Image 1: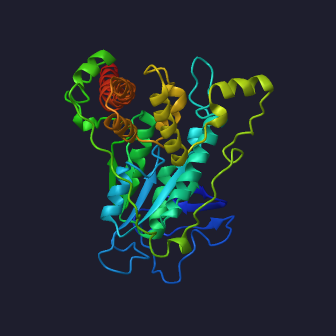
Image 2 (image 1 turned 90 degrees about the vertical axis):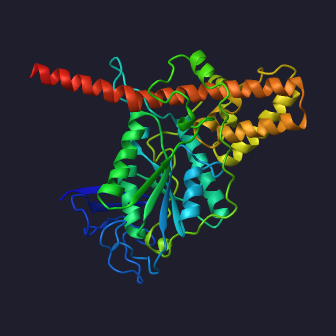
Image 3 (image 1 turned 120 degrees about the horizontal axis):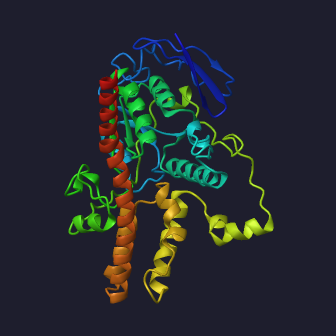
Length: 394
């Protein structure tokens, strides 16, 4: 039997990892307030996660409990995972994990290591998670914030609330898909639950590719030609009301405190005057994370397009890209907002602006889908060839 530790807020949870169904949690250390691992007085004995006998709070038959795992999709609008969970579940618990691996050093490259996340991006993400929690609370829900590996945190929370399913958006890089596979394995194979993942953060859906991922063009010009005539899907409207938290969730789980830079291993950045000017010229000084700020920046961006004498002169990367990259803003939402401008004033200028926005967003689609192709198609083939060569040598 082995132990793993996860930290949610100020609580460190130690639990067994070598059991399958029927395992009993170990102990909690450093608890404050209501113990995360404590048993709710109204709850029965927990016999594993997601299974028929693992519903300590599922007292009414037919009720479905879901976990919405937020990743690079820190928003409520155009959020298919959230929308699907709202439609299918009687209650749900939103969760976000600050994965320590994202705040460490990358693998050595040419003898040097580089930080995966710097203090400015970390601050941006902290802002975004803070805003997401506030927006959820305004709609009667909340957000569990944990510092730990998702493959440890998500199953642990699921065991406590008796979750039936996990909903999330899929990612494209190799490391992100590996983490997703581990979470899926813990939910489905180890505990018999359901795992639902959805495509996001592009203008066009990957399933709408005329050529498929395997035959995806390697140049943008060819990709642009292939995508001509393919209409983006409509964005998903933000739900006015979100399903409430599972019964007893607040009694068994601490929502967790949002970490500071120091919690994530950073020192507060100390800037001299020259560096301050450089940061401000790049827009960092006013670059606050979060969906609320993203929607403000989108309105500002549209106004700049309207007032600009020449389309394309507004800085796409400096004005809106950080919120697109972190999922605080949906590309489809952005395009639809610009299209509304075109509907109100159908001039040559607005048409040019619309074409420019589509062009920039199509570039994002190309890189994201190309990354997905290498992760899902090219890399597995290369590994198969390498294994075959190694077997021949042996």
